[in-house]
Length: 115
Image (cartoon, rainbow, N blue to C red; front, side, top):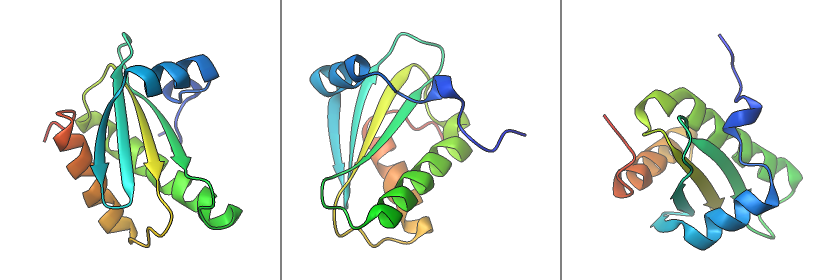
């Protein structure tokens, strides 16, 4: 079983990121923002962006890893065909379980969570 995201599941190019920010719908949560836009593919893709001045590099990379892992473990319950950007805000001190609840609530707001 693969324990990481494939390259195709990550939004990489700046043109795709710009399109996501221009055309995506925004949803706010506690210390986290979701931007979602259709991508025309059979699968969803992800990018995690901590805001500027979000702790040190260890904290930024920990937040990235945790949200990528939450996406990977729950991607069978997330509607496919969307690009998702999670923007993590400074001061978020939620535990892993709380982050999962915040993520699920944002995806439910967006209509992308299928229980």
